Amino acid sequence: MVPGWGSRRHAGVSHGTLWGVDLDIVTRSPLFAGLDESSAAALMARTERIALKRGEEIFTEGDPGDKLYVIASGKLKLSRTSHDGRENLLAVLGPGEIIGEISFFDPGPRTASAITVSDSELLSLAHEHLQGFLEANPNASVALLGALAHRLRRTNDNVADLVFTDVPGRVAKALLDLAQRFGVDDGTGLLVRHELTQEELAQLVGASRETVNKALADFVARGWIRLEARAVRLLEVERLRKRAR
Image: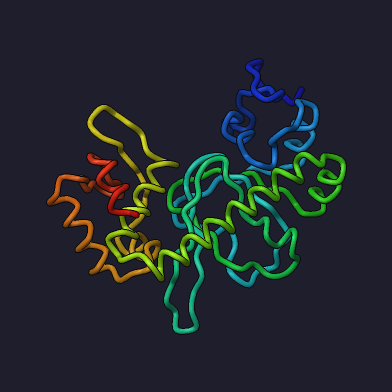
């Protein structure tokens, strides 16, 4: 057993901490899905722990893609930059999710930049180590492809929203998506600590900051949400769901 792994079990994998990383979260990653304890331990032994502060780059669009990352804690954003310097925020990812998988299946430069939006811990795995492991563990390969398909489905939905959904609807949908992954019900609403600035939230929605702020102000006036510092509290989830349709 890898040192630091505890005795609690889930899906055949021992849990606990390793290098200060919560393995309960790490093993939810598609990369570890379906692995038995010895296989998960072998894969974990090949990873490298990285601790980052808010605002640090993990990789930049155009960099060589030679590693895959599992987010153990914190949040990061994936973004692309246009030729005139404008930034488009593609996604906000959190614990258990993976990044860098595209360049593994389609070798080439990074298609986006990855930057932390909060203090974060990641586990990195070199492609050279991943290749042989996936060949020996087909269940992990299938799970990783499933994660890619999920990311593609989300991208398709976002493209459709840009065409068919107005800005308030896109704002409502973005808040619900963030709440699903990061929200905590504390008895006075669903608190979502998204860690994004107003500009980043606007980029995620694909609209101007002014237009997004107007939609947020309308939701506040209706009593659907309450804004807090780099967080939002959802008070009327069903109303937001109806507006997101």
